[in-house]
Image 1 (cartoon, rainbow, N blue to C red):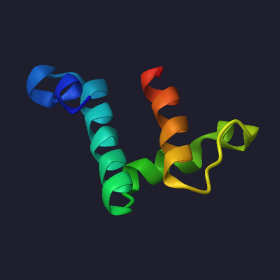
Image 2: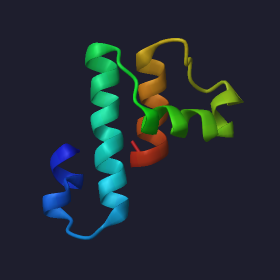
Image 3: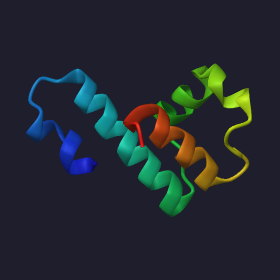
Image 4: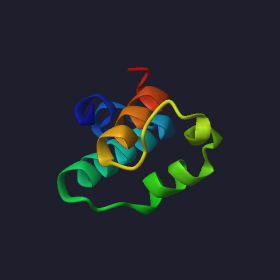
Length: 73
């Protein structure tokens, strides 16, 4: 996903740049447990998190929600 949304491959696309940042944030969250402001802002702004579909008490549940929401996976 980093290559797909990398700014060098999508010149001028703000949406691709935004997704690239979120992909990198998710990677840091999963590998090092470090959050980032962009990912936290997306998490806090979304009302769908309370629907109970995902267990958000662990990184993998949060990642599953995130990939479905932003990348239709």
